[in-house]
Length: 236
Image 1 (cartoon, helix red, strand yellow):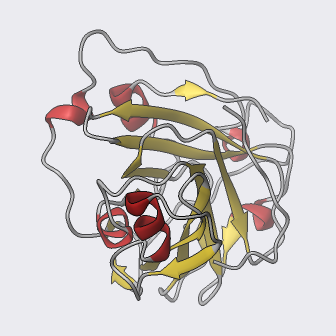
Image 2: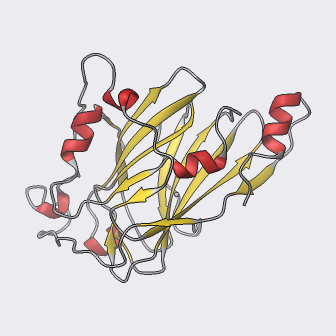
């Protein structure tokens, strides 16, 4: 696994199927590039309170760098996400809209989850956790934004369901950059991209609606969530 970080410009994490990609996958026709997307859905409050971390970049004992370092959190037995009810409607604890697009073919492509800050508040995405369902076997995943950002990394886990889909848990973590590069202003967007092989077991709309977004509002870093799901810390 590796993290793919692409500088701003991929703005933006309405078909309900992968259309040409899924058709080619099912029929075995020749690979053709395609780009399909869902409509956007919204969730979360228009206003919220988010604690502002103290400290400067690279001051690792300060709250600004609370997610700069991490460790693996293995869990014993079956992962608890497997026993949770499937999320069928996008949820967020801050005001966001979300849409999903796919670019690729039946052999490989990228799903991009595009989030737009629909609230009236500046949102810090540092330590935010995404939980969603998508085709199994992703080998590439990363964060981008329409505003300047730097040095994102992740706590990450894939949990296969055995039906061609997996749950993905990712905490977005930053290090060594100012607070402004961890923030998304009202009306601005950020994305999370997942690369892998398409599977008709899940549609773009189902991927979109499966996502739960939890911003870190209290500087607790969403640590309880990543320990609960047993994520692994990925390198830069």
